[in-house]
Image (cartoon, rainbow, N blue to C red):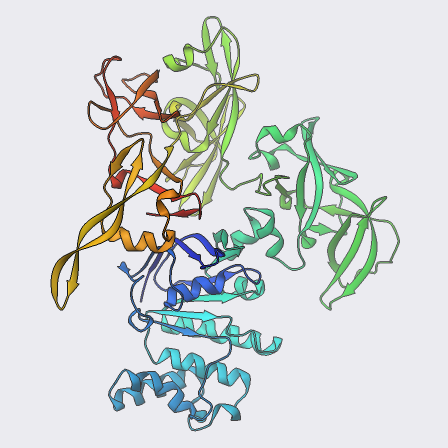
Length: 625
């Protein structure tokens, strides 16, 4: 029925409180999306902005590729079901369901057909002449759903519709809503604070915290591949166990220290982790209760615990324990037939494949499904540099910085492409969403590469590296930096008075309005007049005082004699007629692609248009376009 696109959506209240920050998502037709998170995370505010009940501070909302920011709620073709049912107590069920259609002046016969059709779907035909007070909570919620169904909307928005019901009825209504979605084949967006509801209902789930999206993924991926500690702890019951720990490599295994105990696991389990974490620095280690087993055989995976509280839940037993000789708590599950004693030292076994690792500071996962980067040694031997056991002819930008010795290369996964110079063997082919992550074994080094094509294990594959994305290191010093995707410079908004077309009594006239231009290094860049009201409504009166961050692509080619003056600092020669220049602009360095023909004494300039730039107001931390 409808697709949606939320592009850099923000909600900032007049007192400066930011409820939603930079919400980006594309929702496919007929999806069941669940937005979940703790109270105050911005989930209901996001839903209300989609409905048109809350004004969008910044960003663009599209429904079926139609821009709807300025549309009234009644014109968006969406319907909303609230937590408190919002039924008229003096009206019958029939009249409650028909009320919106009567206001819209739908013919009576069509109203009757729609109401009876919805009542049949929801199994409330026998209640059409009853008043809401004569019905149970679950029946009233069905009426609220029925009132939404009769409108035949493109999108259903449900704001914690089951939170007023008891646990048994909630479970029943979850099933009913899923059946309804399958029958109507309409886009559903459902808000809840209950992660069980989210996991059982959503085709995809949006996890939010303090106004920010933490992760958007399928229920299974959220559970098995959380992107950070918050998602790992929020999804799953009971909550994941977390420990301060360390990793070091010993005897070709990874030794994991959990608080005061060690386990040893195969190295391939942590092969996606950045090697810098193998030096024993403190990290956070997580393991779910169901991934700790009472019965096991591999002593390398065993830890000693002391049960403190035993909760018998029928089919399973939850054991709240502490690690021996510590006060560190750990919870695990056992079969209900196992008899454990409180305060008695026992051995349990951790499933090494289910361990999670997080950075101590950022709390981001250290085992992403697609690794960000890998570090490889490039060796000097007999007048040649050797990478992956093969000779490599390095571009001049590297040769200028290198002596006759070994160095370390940092190679991002996204710069490794199938086809080219190097040869390796497929060690594993892992499907991730619509792509395949190739684990390529090359001279005992493991290289990751994304591919649209599936490969067989053991198959030979050729690959190459985009050297512009590679970092050359020597003893923790970066000798050659990667070419970043975007440049960042700072400027302002320049206030102007502009004649803009406005509609008056069906005629288009020109009217003077306050507008602005982008200002970078005393150069003014025109902005479409359609952006004036939208942007200034966010930035209020003294917008010209705000510091604006402008970003633009490094692949943009430098101009000559036309645009913002630049000072050339150095040329980066990557070979094959590919050169980049490092320039100075407003005491900041930027990188631009060089033209195929140039002279180092040319008057280099930067020519920018509105379409080239992304603008962010640093005061409110809001993206403006």
